[in-house]
Length: 480
Image 1: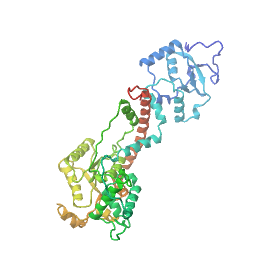
Image 2: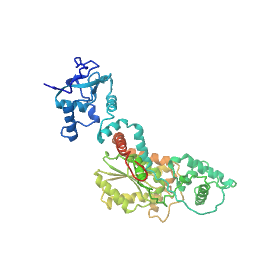
Image 3: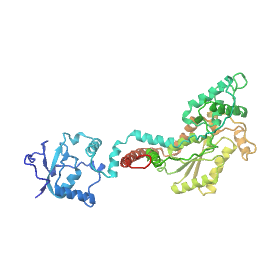
Image 4: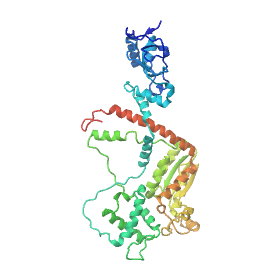
């Protein structure tokens, strides 16, 4: 004969009709555990010391807190008590009935209800994470992706110089050229910092280019070293005068290293908590059957190319001319460790003798020095077809001292064209089109969807950890 959870009060009548809302003691067989509960909370196990103590307490003291159920007998709160009561062999248990029906809820809605009625329950960290995942939303996912792309760009590094240097004021005659510079920079803020060379090509491409001096009709800006020097001087004076934002221009060949320091432990921990678990990158290329790599000839295009490389999670090498041995060795090592069947190289170089030579030399080195036989190399930019399509202006003439001069000139002529001459949007469009042409797009999109689920879980983990340590004493500087 089954045991009763506890003896009913003389003033309370035992249940006869299972549909009676005012029920207090109910046959235990009427209650139906919610299957969704296991999606949030772990299954009770008598082998777990905490669960064993809980079960012994119920067996000894009875179910003191009534189990909450729906009108159709699905348990909302009290799955642990029900488990322990069944283990103890109780015939009835005390219940409270909510005026709702399980059938009126979707799975997501019922999950939210279970969580709402279990806020005060003592939970493990894994259970808390599963609860918080219900709060994860698309804004969290977009924030993670935005953060990933933001961290993929080259941030300008500033250096303060003390002292006084007097330069000539910018005259009214220089205003047309200064206005052209400001218009280009303001229209391309998302591609900051700009190199002066890229700015030079942007000015050359204007129709018409501005006058270097408003009072001299024959001073129209063109693709010459004289005009380039005039641009460098005006940009410098404009930045010092506060007319051109310092962050708008960069010189990647002269980096500045600053150290990340903190006044105390509290400020460091606070900074770490603020960014905790927000730098996750899922490998969006892991499902591809081939390995991919982007090789860019110049530092000046790195901020533009790097954002596209980050979008696809494709490794990128900035060769700075003929690439040194270390990046090639690292690329070969990554390829071997990947176990992929083929290495696909996407190369971006100038359209000049050395640019063509860099492509050929890089591929030959990987093949002959590092024994990678299966390489598929693509010259993404700049090609002869792109020179015509985008009307790319030439930059002087091919160097006769180049070992590849004769072959290049016989095939393309002696005009050379630099990557910086392409507008940022054009270069990004060219690279994105090339990537989409060689990857398995369906596999890539599947990884994007998986990343959204990853972000939901990470967001929940982050909130659970922060909730756990929010009152942690950090000593000098405060609490977490």
